[in-house]
Amino acid sequence: MVRLAIQAAILTLTATQALAQPAAPTMLQTRAVRIHPAAEANQGVAVDDRAFYAIDNSEIGRYDKKTGAKTGAWSGDPKVFPHLNSCAAVGPELVCASSNYPVTPMRSTVEVFDRAGLKHLRSIPLGPQPGSLTWVVRRGDAWWAGFANYDGTGGEPGRDHTATTLVKFDDAWRSLARWTFPRSVLDRFAPSSASGGVWGADGLLYVTGHDAAEVYVLRAPEGGGVLVHLATIAAPVEGQAIAFDPSAERTLYGITRKTREVVVMQLPVVGVK
Image (cartoon, rainbow, N blue to C red; front, side, top):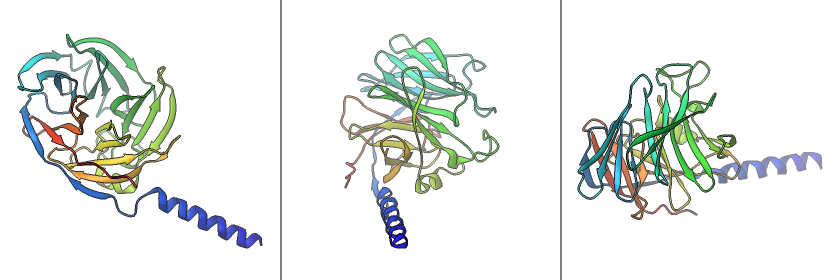
């Protein structure tokens, strides 16, 4: 009886694990509907109702969404702001992920700007974390942040790209839960890591790597664990930070670093079983 009970438990666990990750993620595709030149389009892009913000290591450019005309700029001291990775429009502010990449040990801060005047308001040091902060967004009553790890330059001993981690924080920046990435996505990150991440209105997480022209769609199990890879969307971008347009359904902004352009895409709907 004991042996039968153990066998039943093993079968139940195996079935649960099989359901957690789809046998094969859905493969989808999108294309560019608009392209805007932006000199700062090197690390990523943020979007609000009227403008998009092209992000470089220590520069931010604000552009009109309709015309692509530049309407503002900020430039910081590279010694103080060595590596802005991404930004997100949160209320009247632009909340940005910043790190000391490629210097180790890794140190990360959240840098906050006034969107109207592109004035730097404050810096929030995060202390020791499971990687280098590459993106941070607001969802519900929490902050969600992506921490990168690398196989080579910028990596720390004992961790490689497989240690890429999603962390949920409260308003005091205390960790509430953590998720790791499934192998099907980690293999696409290698040898780098996750460079961008945003929540969709559908409750799914959309993540980009460092170089690949793809967007990975994931579900976060309640309370932490391993993210579930639902779909991969082939996209005309080169990884890096992305942003959903809050005023247009399923409209995603990304960048191409080689040409310094902001790319606007209309994403297909991801069916969730």
